[in-house]
Image (cartoon, rainbow, N blue to C red):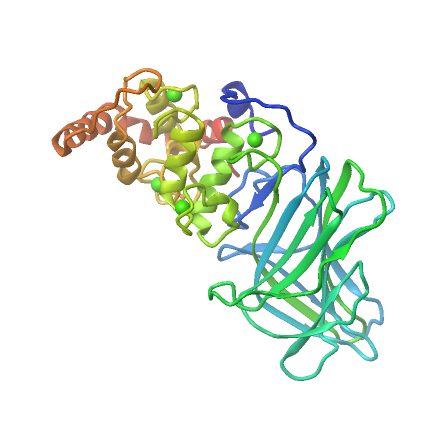
Length: 386
Ligand SMILES: [Ca+2]
Ligand SMILES: [Ca+2]
Ligand SMILES: [Ca+2]
Ligand SMILES: [Ca+2]
């Protein structure tokens, strides 16, 4: 569960039968999540990594020890379904020890506790400017891939056919297709208990490894549009993933709800209006945009604050840039839902003057809530930030 405040206002807009889609997650590694910097409460971190400049930095350096130095990042994944995992990282560097290699394993265990899974192993066994890129399940021959930054690793699994693919994208910013291994079949039984697993290892004496994790998504491919968590309901968890995805920008195309190839504030608007049947500004997702929502977001104390990137839907970041600013109020009032009750067929487009006057009114009325930010106990109680 999220924090207490979120769970109290947990509102279900749409429910439908769920047949055990995998539980989706999105970590942006900005270090502002309420669980030690992570957004997700369920990470198992065996690592002394730390958040730096919007990434999670993992580094291992071996001295004269022959024992491999490993860092792990793991999470139990509930459910059983088709999914796509994407890990994007920067500045990966590996130096192998004497007679050993260093490497990075990005995998999804499908049959825990037997640890059977599909995934990618990258190592530095090749000379010069290339990694070896392995399919960890099929044991096919490694492909040589260029060392690039940023790079993206992809696992896609279809539960119906048990076919999966793994891919290495040596520059996700361009339109060139990733380098793939041939589609393979996962033959063991797939269980409901699954696990995401990332391991970074400095192999042996004088080895080292360094990586900056940019973001990670694991998303169900058989859930309804907008149900990124895969739990069969559309709620704040999904919308907050949508806003975080907007801030990252270059993410899984499942977040591109309006299909224009970009992930931006228009996709947030699509989620809220078309899927959630509500208005921009409905911070508590009860289907209406009214003064309760404004009290909620101004009470969070993040309006025009000097902490960059820490705001979420619930605390006023409605356009997905990470902060609660006037731009969010403009975005909401342009949607014309304030005090209009539940969304209906009849809409009106507000004049710019109306928006301007409304903003002056709102900031005048609620701006004093900013002072509460100076009370750290309130801030922690409301949102659990650290
Ligand atoms: Ca959901
Ligand atoms: Ca879009
Ligand atoms: Ca509301
Ligand atoms: Ca914003």
